[in-house]
Image 1 (cartoon, rainbow, N blue to C red):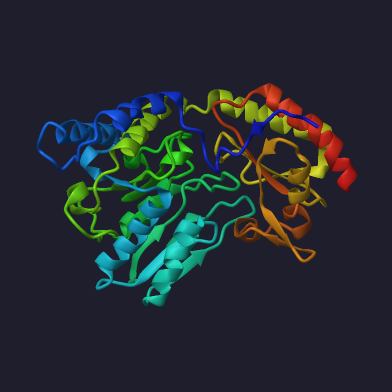
Image 2: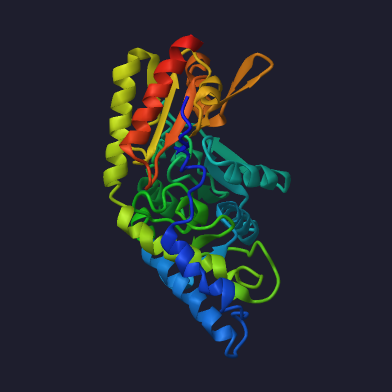
Length: 377
């Protein structure tokens, strides 16, 4: 057993980066004014919000006025999906998405179905990748929105967003991508992706929980999710959360240094090789072998319950892709959509690496697994 704490769940949440915490400090103790107030207390707050907006827009390579601050990725997704539906429902009621979206996309779509929306949930291949051709096949005259996750949170598979955007443009359809997992890990330049709407979650990129952003391409028709006064140029009411916006802005500025994947990708590949060397055919990869996030390694120990392994991995934080209920195993919707066999999916564990991960930590995990896995077979 180890007394060491090893964090390998960076896709679930990240710690606040030291530089981010430092940037936020003055807004805890000094700059308390309302950004809408035109006096000495409000002006520094307003300037901080607009500086943060520029920092986010620099990362996404868009105009600052195309960034709306939100409370996080879930709100951004809800704003994009519901906002597009309510703005365009006179034009049509059809939405296209995939079976491997985050619940913050799936559940708004299900909610809108109660209000008359028709939603097509397109399947994926064995690697968790959607076929753009299947998206185009689903298009009808009533299609008003396509929403496809940029990179899946469980297996890390990166979707062909650029190809799908061409299909959306050809048919005059608004295109949204949930980029909560990809922002700060790979390039998310909105011009290259070709999207109209893109969601950002602060706590996935070393900013605080409770802050995010929604990119809204200039000219895109979208109804506000929160109505009230004219904050965020009338697109999101509520007095601005200056402290957290400053944090998100700084996190986006820092993230630009890490987009190559370099060290983290190297660590992930070394970890995967160690797993293969030690467990051979007992361990298999879930997700695309090449087109996936540089920090994400979702693997299965065949014939073993991932939840049991995690419960024995003393001090190691990671996540599993299957839940056990009354002796039966329930795969996550993502693994199910990929057609993963139950005896494989039940052993799924997602290890997601971060900036502080070391090779020593990964080697420790391997040693722990060598003691645990054989005893569970």
